[in-house]
Length: 122
Image (tube, rainbow, N blue to C red; front, side, top):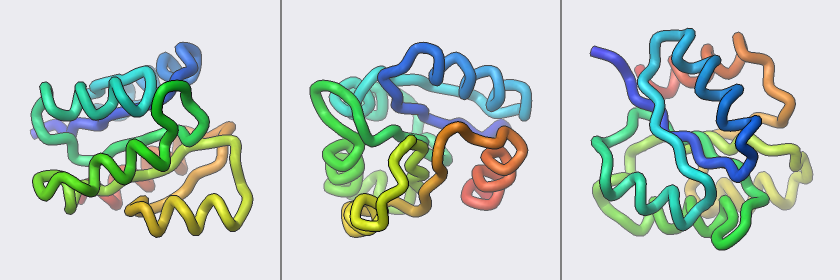
């Protein structure tokens, strides 16, 4: 059975890059444009196996999105990977406290990203 990945990123280019990479690795992909849309898509879709989210987005940033996901008992165990240009330890710590599982800095290495997702989705 295919694993489903929810990607949340305001950059259309990044969403397309992620979609191509993930589809090429055999995953199903569901996408959202920001944190608000991410919560809406999560509610309307089947349970994802892994969530990838950016931090800097309009309407609701990645921190708010992660907190929103973790407030819902149904999604407590879904791994959340932060994929962002940010690398500051304070932001990583804040994301961890909000409920993020891991952190990958953009630009991403497709092979490393796929390996990380496979480990988390196992």
